[in-house]
Image 1 (tube, rainbow, N blue to C red):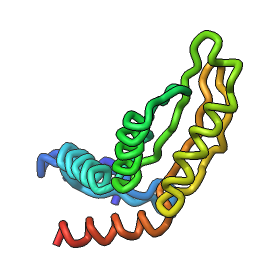
Image 2: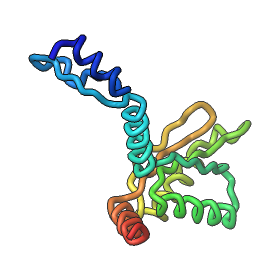
Image 3: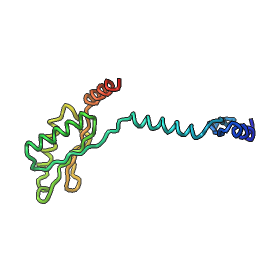
Image 4: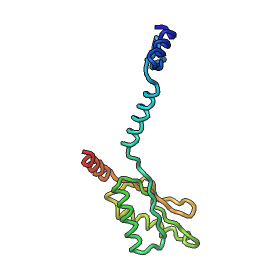
Length: 156
């Protein structure tokens, strides 16, 4: 069919002439409502975005001379983030002369990693970034599998 015939037929039916496969020989076009096509494709895209789980990066900040109760409270929060399947960035902030004792911050980060060793994997080793030392933890494969089973049960 010629292009002019297809355009006239599209106008007659109050539709649009949409080229579907421009690289085909001959090129393929269809008569359809282009607005409806765009709406349906955007709706499908929104659904796929909604079904994807975005792994957020959560940050928990420590100080080098943290008390035991504060440490335990922050450790519980880190454990909660990990069980939810989120990445966790642990940061030890040094102020003033604390920056001289970076070994305290390193031991603190290692202590957190040791406490959670069954549930986490280290994505980034402890490193200094200005006046802060940080490392990134991600959930281990067993935690991720546990989360997938929970999600499968809740969606059924």
